[in-house]
Image (cartoon, rainbow, N blue to C red; front, side, top):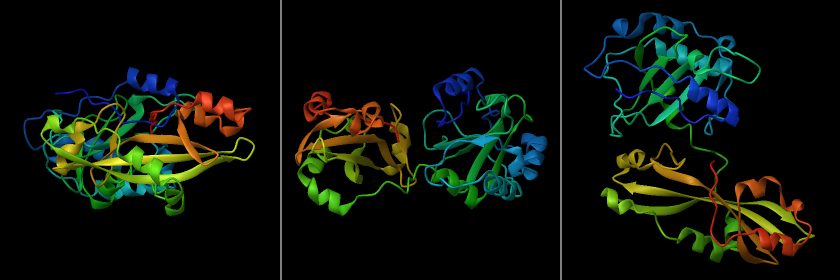
Length: 296
């Protein structure tokens, strides 16, 4: 049985280290379906009575950026009314493994710091409408499986960033550079016995400096895998999979100087904006010929 760990958390690096130091408990045996009452009656009771005030924090949801603690608690309470017998999700990177997950923290140890022992861990896989839930060391033991479409879709669509789209006007302006970005060398997915294709999913103008004669564009692509259910097994290096089972590896930032594509800035450089460069030559010295991918 593998050790369960929380998913990717949008928190400072110090918090990530604390979470790693307080890993989630194992979620139970992998032998066969576990009746809800045996899986964790006290845990199910906790879920059934959860309120927004009980939630200190939860992982960022790209697909649901405006979700509140009370809205999340309401979804969990509704799902808790439908426990089912189910086998624990596997830990062998197969199609029965967890694909999407999130951590919901119920106790705040210190300002801005949450510990894994006080968290609920929600997981969803390719089997639709089934959500696996277990808690940290400070919460009731056991694991429960809930059959609920709304909570399942929340997890499955958590990486579907509504802000990522292709601005057609921007694409027409930098079409040649965008196509070169899209046609760069593909990862070696063929070695996994699958075929892959790449599509442009995001392109937008994110910065402009008249003083430098420069513009900054954000580009993002995604890989479609055939068969698509293999996509979750091919994630590496911070990549994630969206609800369509497309693999996202991050975004790149392209610089145009006097209307010509000159190279890419890293995410760290982009954070400082174009105004950090005193001259166009200073900007040109900072770019690289290949994209430096940053996590979404």
